[in-house]
Structure formats: structure tokens, C-alpha cells
Image 1 (tube, rainbow, N blue to C red):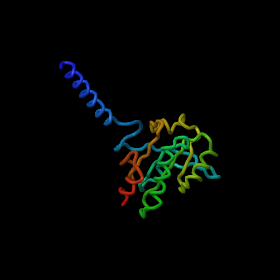
Image 2: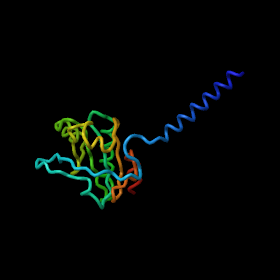
Image 3: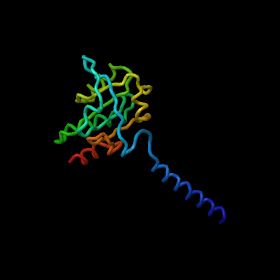
Image 4: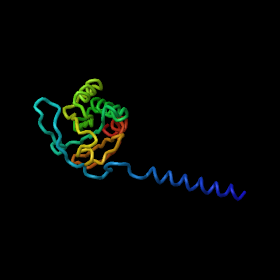
Length: 166
């Protein structure tokens, strides 16, 4: 009987620990933080630089992904489709891939039918300054920013985005 009590105590403590770990913030930035500005080469032939701050005054959906990460790639495509199907025009998607090869990036956005003028590739991959600035990890993430650049949602799904916008 005494061992049963100890087993019960151990189970209770381990279950409480798992609840605490779920509430710990994941890697990267959190809701309420201001998204750091960045400049990145566009994929266009003229190779101009684009920055996040140029889109101030609009809501922005900032999606970090890579073609080798199936989950982040699917999430990026579904978010792009959700924005295309909404009537709200004050949300701009900024899609950043961490593929190390431009050709893989271009083929992926063609296959996934990502139609956005603000779709970029960071060919330094996970060793880039942008990856470090946003404290990203494998599995990547996305952020919904308000018109002032404050993160109002993190890791939002396409369904949540559609509900948020309508």
C-alpha cells in the first residue's frame, strides 16, 4: 500500500511538470514583442532590397519556412491560400525561405503556387543573421503583426487566420 501512494505522488508530480512545460514560451519571439526590422534581397532580377518597415501601416503575416521542412512549407502554402481567399486587403504576407539554393526556392514557390510580391529567400539558411535575429529553430514559425509591427499572434494556422480576418 505504501508503494502505491508513492507511485501516485510520482505520477501527480510528473503530470504537473508536463503542464508547466506546455506553458513555457517556445523559441523565437512572443506575442506582444515588436518584430525586428530586416532588409533582404528580393528574388527579382533587379535584386533590390526590401525591408519589413516599408510595409508599416498594414497588418503583416510574417512566415518563416524552408522547402526541406515539410510542415513549415505546408503551413506557408495554406496561409498564402487563406490570404488569397479573403476579402481583406490590408494584410500583406511576407514569406521568407531559408533554403540555401535559389533554384530550390524558386521551384518550391512555383509548385506550391505561392503568389506574393514579398516572397524572399535567405540563402545563408539557418546561419543567417535573420534566422538568429528572430531566434528561430527548426520547425520555423509565423507571426501576425499589427500595423505598428507588434506581434499579435504566433504560429497561426490558416483556419485561425481566416477567423481572425473575418
